[in-house]
Length: 77
Image (cartoon, rainbow, N blue to C red; front, side):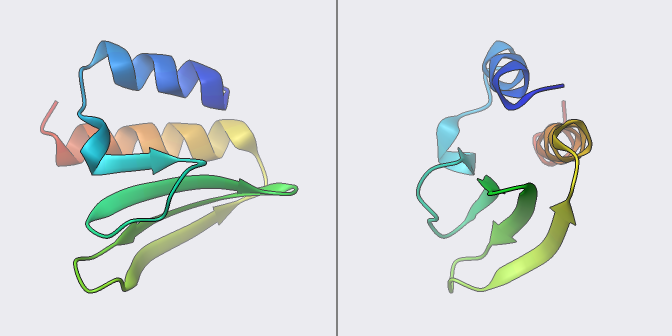
């Protein structure tokens, strides 16, 4: 899955954008997905601004699959 495909699938599930950020602002109390040059990062920023549950991937598909699964689990979908 590509990042664009993941965005489409997230939108289809109507997951509110306040719960995540994809290659955008890093704000508190949301899941973050971002590409950094040749790798992808997925993590959660808590209400105090602390980074939690950090995962780094060398493959876009693996990163997207992981992030999509985490959002679905958190939203109970």
